[in-house]
Length: 161
Image (tube, rainbow, N blue to C red; front, side, top):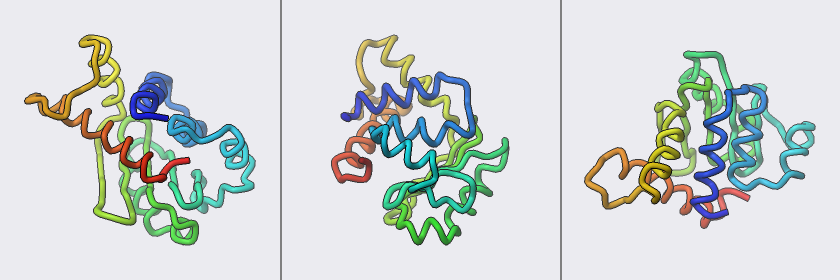
């Protein structure tokens, strides 16, 4: 998947009502995980989360939580023995309104922004007929472009299947 396909899949996910149980699987699917991978995670065959979330070995540990508990759950994901054992590179917690994520292997990438940012990216694309520009003087457009560039970089580095 390229950055545009990932952005479209994430935007479509953000437009749907938040389903705490389904969100981790939909998120992984948006990043191009195969149906068999999702099926194995759902069945628990390869999901070794100790926090009731979804843990994909060598990739990400995701947990949905109640409103207002995002920071607490992110800390639990960070401290989780299962996260370390599975060598998860990323952790992500969301309550459907806010989300926080970290890259555990490099500089911390932490965001506590509404998931609605994806809605804005979709609107931007529809309104202007183009993707956000990283050289834009508009800080918001630049932020959206930087996010897309990060997704491309992560994909190229093999951080996602």
